Image (cartoon, rainbow, N blue to C red; front, side, top):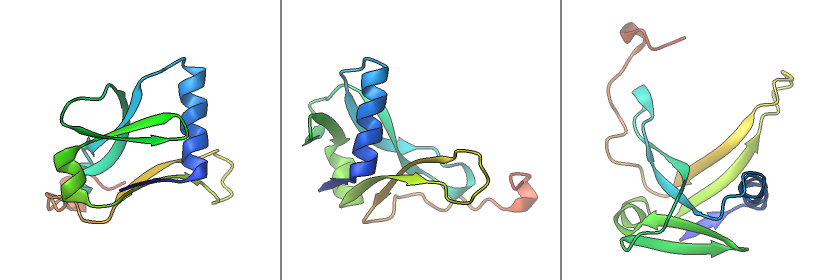
Length: 114
């Protein structure tokens, strides 16, 4: 199952339109650094090994094996409300089940903490 919030769908549609992209949006595993792998979005074409979901004219593709291992997936767009004026915000892609390999054992002593 794939849930895409109105906010996320609107932002994705705007981006695809501005960039004149007609490809599908892939939900895939991205490197998460010390926090381990996380789900992210990429522009890609559907493959035979994918599940395809259509949301208001936008095709989302997820590898079938990833779909099974993650369970339900939700794509949202979060607006930064910290008041910092930095215009932050972005996509949050979450899954019902944890992604394998999520604990890489990093710590601040590795020099990765800011």
